[in-house]
Amino acid sequence: MSRFSPKAMLIAFVVMMLVVLLLFISWWVVRITLYIPQTVGIDRVEALCSKWPPRRQVPFFEPPRKWSSDCGAVRRQFGSHVSEDTFISFTYISPFDNRSYRGTLQRNWNDQNQPTRTGDRIEIEASRLMAETFTDWSSSSIAAENIIRSPPKGN
Image (cartoon, rainbow, N blue to C red; front, side, top):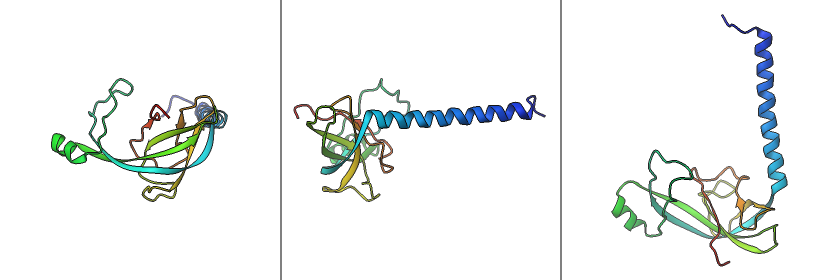
């Protein structure tokens, strides 16, 4: 038998649901306020390989994974502890300064849940506050280990 009355449990459940709803609404407001969706065309699709990260990886404190286009050399060096992932590159217009920037995402599927190909169009969201910042929140087809990478310098 519970120590809490049914009324107290109902109140706790309602408060918990209100907190979840408030978090969802605040996330939605942040997205609308800080990001602008735009459709971009994929310029390049590349398969890159990397050694699997350690199981006990501490986010933000581990060095980023090193990716290589020479998958054979990576496999010879690390054996079966290698992952191969698809990276796409595209150009987007930053709403911050209306200039063109290059972006790269680790992503296996396009917005139609088909393997990515050069020329496909995908939806991204570009930051209103930072010129070289974008995300891919709008897609359900992001690779499991998606890492948003800053565009290469010099563009």
